[in-house]
Length: 102
Image 1 (tube, helix red, strand yellow):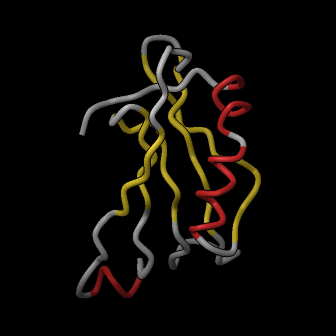
Image 2 (image 1 turned 120 degrees about the horizontal axis):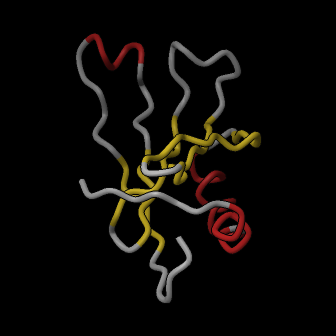
């Protein structure tokens, strides 16, 4: 989303409890641009083979959107956040981000 003001923020989702917490012990982090969701940092879970954190962005695709996952993966959620902050200009230039309200 190439617009005038860009306020990038992150919101940690709630920790799963009960049996859900067993399969998904690491809560995901929502990536927000100007308070609207545009991506996610996904934590390792029972579904991941590499036990790493992955970054995905919602990218415009015609009248809708599609999910694009970055190839780079991270040992920690904080490393993914820092990578996004450092590389935000390049990410924003490469992708036309799709945003939707909570």
